[in-house]
Image (tube, rainbow, N blue to C red; front, side, top):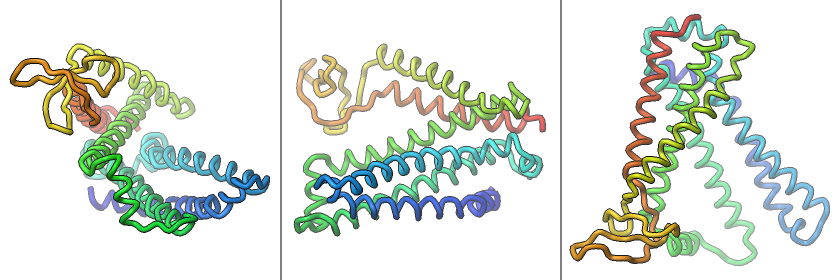
Length: 274
């Protein structure tokens, strides 16, 4: 499995390096020409607008390029080699998943750090890193930042596994290469069904974990900052500034993600007909 991951990295690193170089150049240009755009310069404003559009397009294309690596195994000749390797289906899916997460994580970290360096360099007033960190933590706690990172990683895993499962199911359902793109329709349908199921479960079981107090709370009104807390004296209405996590909805997502991962592995191992 690790050798297969190394093969995947070798096959994609040149594209990732090229995208990263383009993104860093565009970010540099955005900071340099940002002042001109603010002062009403047509050239500066045009450059900023085009750069933002290119960055968005590059992000989208990179995402589909990375996840498209899995589709190539299903619909192109390289699949004959991959599926004859002494690997189980879940190992193939797991390797693709780890490499995809690795690239997304690496790109995100480098771009975030580069933005930080550029912001400290181009800020018109003196700003040091400690002041910036203290300013951020005054609005959001370290605990909430860590929780946000964990949720972001899990959401990424959930989306990737759903995409891989949709591609595999599309290959089995529509064997013609020319209509292989219908996996996206399957992805949209499954996303809608799973999202509806999560909504129903969270509606039936509206119990949340408040990470400010690590207590179980329930929604009292539509405003997410108001909750009814289960305390020793019964129900206690209060205001919370934290980010509650629905317990049933979270468990539902975990179970679904694991099931889709195992399902994709099973279909690759038992149902794929090259």
